[in-house]
Every structure is written in C-alpha cells, then in structure tokens.
Length: 434
Ligand SMILES: NC(=O)c1ccc[n+]([C@@H]2O[C@H](COP(=O)([O-])OP(=O)(O)OC[C@H]3O[C@@H](n4cnc5c(N)ncnc54)[C@H](OP(=O)(O)O)[C@@H]3O)[C@@H](O)[C@H]2O)c1
Image (cartoon, rainbow, N blue to C red):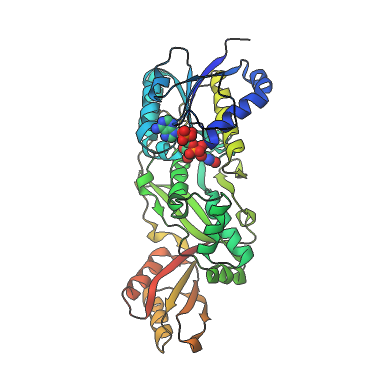
C-alpha cells in the first residue's frame, strides 16, 4: 500500500467530529477502497478544552487555522468551519495556494467564491471537492459530475433544505402554524437558534447555484437566484393545498435556455404546491431530494439525508477517498475557463399554474376587485376559495388557483392590486409543480 493521505481538519463541530468518528469506525474499509490509509495529522477548532466525545490525543492541535495550510506533513485540508468568508475562506485560499488538496462542506463559501477557488485549484493542479456542501450525504455532485456526465441536463430541481422540509411536513401532519412548528424544530435540533438562512431560502439557494453551475456548465451566479422562503406560509395554505391534491415544499428550480446564441439561466427557490402524485411530494421530514432531467438517462432522483453528522461526514470522506485515489477533476466538471456566462432568465414568459393567497378585509366589493385585476391582466381563474369567519369581523383568506399561463400575467395582476386598501398584507404566490 502507498503512503497514507495526510489530512488536516479545521472544525470539530457536528461534521468535523463526525469525520473523526467515521474514519475511526471504518478506517480499514476506507483504506482498502482508497488504496491507502486516510490519516488525520492535525486538527483545529476554537476551544481546545471542549469535550467533543472523541479522542483528539493522536492529532497535533493548531490554534491558528491557517497554520494547517502551511504544514509540510499535510496533503489535504478539510474545511468544516463554515461561513462564506472569514477564516474558512482564508484557509481554503491558503491551502490551495500551498498546493494542498481541499475538501469542504461549506455551501456558502462555494456559492460565493466557488469560481475563484476552483480556478486556484486548477492552477495548482489540486482538487477542490465539496460533495458535502449540497444535500449532505446524497452523492449528487458525483452523480451529476460523473454518473450523468454523458448527458445534457435540461433541468434540475429539488428539496434542498431539510429544516424547511421538516417544518412544512410537520405543519402538514399537525395542522399547526409556522411559528409553533419552528419553535419545536429548534427544541428538537432540526433548526438553528438563528434559522434565518434556512427559512428565508438562502441555504437552499446556495446549493441550487452550485448545482446549476455543475449541471449546465455555466459560471456560478448565486446573486441571480430568485429567493423566497417559507415564513409566510400559514396552516390555511397547507390545508388549502391538501384539498387541491397538493403538498407545499420549498423547491429550488434551475434550467438553462439557449436563445439567439446566448444562454439564459433560470434559478429560483420558492415554496411550490407539489402534486401528491409527484415523487417529491412524499419526501418528508429533514430529507433532501434532487431531480435531474437528463437527455439520455432520463429523470434521475437522488434522495437521502441532507444533513447530520453521519451523512455529511460520509460525503466528506468520499471526497477524501477520491483524492487518495489521485482522482483530480475540475471542481465544476469543466475547467473554469470553459464555464459559460449566462444572463439571468426573465421568468415572465414561463408558463405555470399559480396559487395566489390574499388576506383581505371582510367587506363587499373586495372579491370583485381581485377578480377584476385577474381579468384585466389576462389571468384565467381555475378555482377560488374563501376562508375565514366574516361574522367575527376578522380578515378573510382568499385563495385563487389560476389556469396555466405566463408568469408575467400573474405579476401584472398583483401589480394592479398593489397598494389596494382591501389587502391586509401582500399576497403570497406559489407555483404548482406536477
Ligand atoms: N451540520 C450539518 O449537518 C451540515 C450539513 C452539510 C454541510 N454542513 C456544513 O459543514 C460546515 C460545518 O458545519 P457544522 O454543523 O459542523 O458546524 P459547527 O458544529 O458549528 O462546527 C464548526 C466548527 O468550527 C470551529 N470554528 C469556528 N470558528 C473557528 C475559528 N475562527 N477558528 C477555528 N475553529 C473555528 C468550531 O470550533 P468550536 O467547536 O471550538 O466552537 C467548531 O468546531 C458548515 O460549512 C456547514 O454549512 C453542515
């Protein structure tokens, strides 16, 4: 067997400690498959005295993370600290500049700086691998970059945030409102104390931007993702969707269109009404799932645990095994110089059915005002349902489902209603999938 792959590990939290545990538990299997041992040499975290339930005595401790990148006895640096910038980015840059292979689970860093880091890695002839950054334990980066490498990928979409999926499926099964379920999710450890990145859709958008670059051979463009989260969804929306034969899921959707010699990239993270017949409807709890529409392989569905120490460590170590086997491919499948730039696609001409929910004052003429706006904008109404207790004098929920039509018509209708004193809050719009 050849010399071990010598590893420095930055970050010993959920994922970092998971990696140590996995390497200890499966070291023999991993060495046999990789053709050599994976040996952790040095580690770093903030607090040396913290009990992490793992024995750190075999490893050198560095107080300064960037010192890991300078060590002569290290071949690969694993960044499991987090944050798009700051120490994680400094470590990744230093490590690549020093000719070290880099593995990370950091979707925020890759979404914001993936092009720069990939170019650096290619220039140095080393690997930059990030399987764990997208959908935790699901091998979707490898699946797209290698398994589906022979295909043109026409579209990619999926459930990319386990926290949101847990909250939505709990709202569905308990009938509880968003705020109550979020609190339970935090108590159970399914949501962070500061859940903003998850529930506002930013985390899913990081992953979607990475998948889009890989799937379509385009430059990463996180800034162009159209993002809305799940905070405005009410128990009544879930009940309404259920009555129509749908569940609500936060979905990331991306596709890329060639028009007049130019490429247009569509990227959106938004709650969708997903038909109960669609494979994504049965993805419950903190599970993630990604669908890739391939021109020869057909529809590929990747599903599994999107987070957690075990699944995420599994993806990190899979990347290390690739490195140990000397498999160094461009991080985004194509060299960075070959990734095409794509303009953000105008969603206006996309055709979909829309669910629009209005919270309105209970007084005569309000429904007529809404339906007139739909008529004037050319939105054809398929069904309209009113919820609430007008006799109690409170707000009333009006849900409209449109026939299939251009998204620009729905936007025009909402523009007509913008500022109307009849609406107690801005309308919520969700598209229908399947
Ligand atoms: N958790 C998951 O299920 C999951 C899934 C997929 C991807 N990820 C990604 O994996 C990465 C790590 O996530 P995690 O959940 O393991 O985070 P975590 O539990 O918060 O662990 C972060 C680790 O980084 C260390 N750290 C933070 N700032 C540091 C600094 N300035 N210098 C040295 N060490 C520092 C912390 O040290 P102390 O322990 O001493 O405080 C801690 O060990 C993130 O990019 C995350 O997005 C996580």
